[in-house]
Image (cartoon, rainbow, N blue to C red; front, side):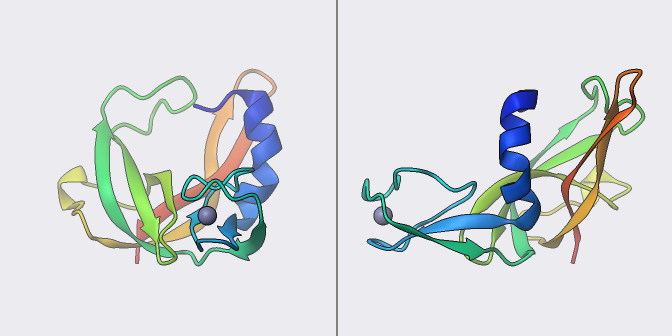
Amino acid sequence: MLSPARAWREYPQRYRLEASRCTECGKISYPPRVVCPGCRGRQFETVTLSREGTVVTFTVVHVPPAGFEGQAPLILALVELKEGARTMVQLADVPDPSQVRIGMPVRLEFRKIAEEGEAGTIFYGHKAVPA
Ligand SMILES: [Zn+2]
């Protein structure tokens, strides 16, 4: 899990699926970075990622962390979007984890992620669903 401060800072970009494309080598980083991991370049343009991608790998969590109770089994998938950027998201709308396949086409949707504490703070973010 991200720390609350870091999550807060990254949320707006994450919500909009904004990534940075290095003007030097073209590598796309999501979330955006200050220094390109490909060529150490520092010049970027902002690109908005498509919501379509495929499952690269996934893991099934049978004992979910606090705030995710009642969601077991929780499927976490590393999704590669069409642009090549990868993001770790929860895979939703799949009743049986045995249905998940590597290479499976998915689409990112904006969903409620978790509810936390007595204040009932609700976190929203992207989840992948079968495309
Ligand atoms: Zn670069």
